[in-house]
Length: 378
Image (cartoon, rainbow, N blue to C red):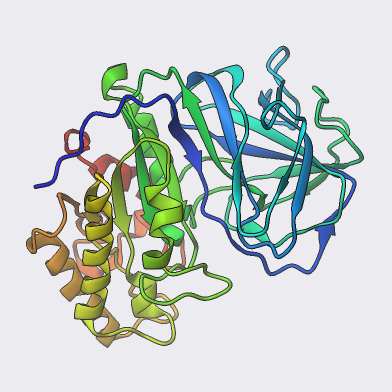
């Protein structure tokens, strides 16, 4: 077994999102975006990672702020709004394909709270970098409104997260962070909008019940449609290629929980050779271990009844799951398959856990998945 040391670094990740190349041919110019992120652990200071990872031109952000959300709206909690600076400057130009951290901002961040990240975009900002499946209402206002405590000016809404992909806190007392590395199931498909009912959210709630020294941030690195072995524009860079940016570079990451493989099986072109999926998973473990992270493998959940289900793909899923359970490749295993399958028809999700499409669990299914994780294995 591979064990990572206890991490006591200054910055620990509390929220993350994996960006992809956007499909829209539109842009913001002279607008203020106000995006909502649901953190896992709290802290007494905060920084935000802004991203232009898929842009082909510089991205200018000015007058950025952060605040605690008030009342489930675009309004900030009184007294919580703080400027975000970049080496003391109020604006930053992010080169194409790059990420930039803000300076630290003093802010008491409550655990499991919503934060508002606002940014004014003075120049044309093509929406090249986004995270699409957010299950979150975000806002924008025409003109410069980043310092508004009130959300009144933010009369326009949208769904993706643009130009942000990480939030870190310090002085949290936590020992590190977990990265949930996956596809649409980890991303939250099957859940309700603005409900924060993804299995990583439920896992973060469980971890909050532990003593502070055993708590961990939970970072969601799920991308809807993502595969281990193939990249595509709508579904992101393949998991092997995005390990460094989405997992290994996360602040104080200690563990990676891997739930991947169903899209390699069910998407066209189908990957029916279980050994190829297993090789990809083994390489994810190798990369994690090389950087001191423990790797926890999750069995692939059932999908009979899904539009692209077939018996050949089901045989591949079963083979990969047996390999995950028995090969010893992972430092620990979480049997999500056993947790959500129908005992009377194990190729299917239990109806009580099925969102209705027979692939993605609903909120009850996500909760059961989170409850299946052995906290002592983290």
